[in-house]
Every structure is written in structure tokens, then in C-alpha cells.
Amino acid sequence: MNLRNFLVACLVLGVLGWWFSPHSPRRATAPAGVASNNGCPLPPRVGSDDAPLQTEVPASMPPFALRAASLKPLAGFSIQARVLSREDYRMGREADLSPTDLALGWHRMAEDEVLSKLSMSQSVRFFSYRWENQPPLPPEEIRISAANMHMIPANDTVAQALADVRKDDHVRIDGWLVEATAPDGWRWRSSTTREDTGGGACEVVYVCAIARQ
Image 1: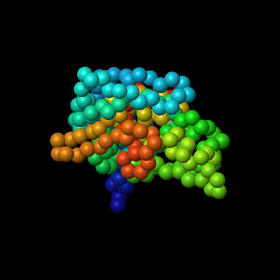
Image 2: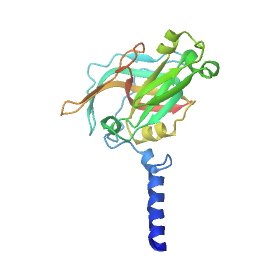
Image 3: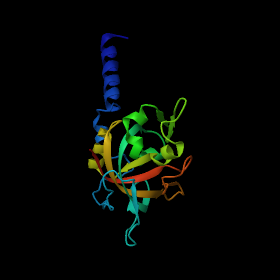
């Protein structure tokens, strides 16, 4: 390889590396399947230090029509929590809607002393945790005070705010739990309880607003 070809190859690799890095402008926009719109009404908002608030959907509220899927609102959703972990996704049909999963903890699952005794990880749209010897909290309390949530940004402003969120941030998220459906029969349905585990237990959240606190 001559010097010119070598330099061209380095330039191409450098551009590709930058484009897929966390600092790329591609992370500041909603994913391809999400329409850039501001028509995302806020649900009733949770109070400080309360458990996640789930509320009824107004009878007159229509689905959110996106390019990749239609989102049927199942419940209003408002949460204040600590980010236990985040994982970004680029592959798969779900990534067309949701580029990021946030594992969130609230109540005592947001405390340093508790989290220091847990090992946590995310992969393939699941969140797991483990401990050595004795759990720092009763396992039932851990189960109902933490969850993995699939985030669908409603617009570019939300997408940028979501891209800026990091582990250990305290965040407030307001939006809607949804069921995504596509004309070919594909479905992706949110859990509507904080007490389930395993497949189908994650929340699918159409995020109208997100802010670090």
C-alpha cells in the first residue's frame, strides 16, 4: 500500500469511528423509526421520592403514529429514579424505535450503600443483578424497586437529553407505556406493573420529557 492509499484508509476509519462514537451528531437525533414531533402530552407527574406513577389513559387519546410502528398508549408513566446502568442498541427492529435501555432504581435501590453491594449488567434488552453472601435488601424489595426500561424518544430534544444520560444520574422521565405494532403483525408491548420479572417484564416508554436532576 502506497502512502496516499494508507492516508485515505486512515481517514475513512477515523470518520467511521467518529460517526459511531458517543460524540457523533447521530446521537443527537431521534432514531430512524421515530417521527420528530412535539405532540407528546405529559401525563400526571410523580411527586418527589414517590414510587413510579402509573395513570389511566384518557379515552380520547389516539395512538402515536411513527414511521416504524404505531404506539398505543397503555398507561401514563412518570418516574424519578437513579440510573443503575444504560445500554445502547443499533441492531434489531426494536432499535428502530428505542436506541437506549435504562436500568432504573428508586427508593432504597437508589442509595449508594445498597448499590455498592450489587453487581449489575445489561445485555440483549435485559437487566440483571447479583450479590455475594447476603443481599443488601430483601430480594423482593430489589425486584419491585428496579426495572429495565426501553426508551423511545418522542422528538429530537428528548433524544439529545437521553443521549446525555449516564450511569448514576438522577433523572425524571414523563411519558407513556405503550404497545408498538406494525402492519406486518410485529408487536412490542410494555409491562404495566413493577412487580413482574423475566421476558415481557420491561417497560416500553414513549418519552415525552427527560431531565437530569
